[in-house]
Image 1 (cartoon, rainbow, N blue to C red):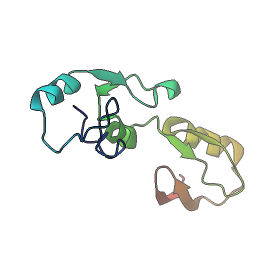
Image 2 (image 1 turned 30 degrees about the horizontal axis):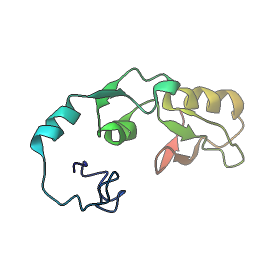
Image 3 (image 1 turned 60 degrees about the vertical axis):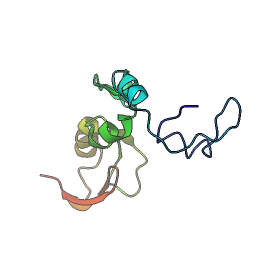
Length: 113
């Protein structure tokens, strides 16, 4: 009964096939197999071409320049990749103040030049 460390809590530490306890012992051979499997970045639809080890998607996703970001203008619902957000802001919000809070995975104060 194998499950990776990130799946065990989701499965309540029970095998999805037979409901037997999975346990807490690591299977290093299976970990090596999973590390050799590469999957596309979660932001592939936004243009990222990176492939990352299975289970490492969230780590890359937090650093990926194609992550979805929200426009810093409070009255705007635009979301786009990091590379698109500056162009959107300049094109659509020239009249806005140049210093404001910016939300891209977390709140950050920025100043647009």
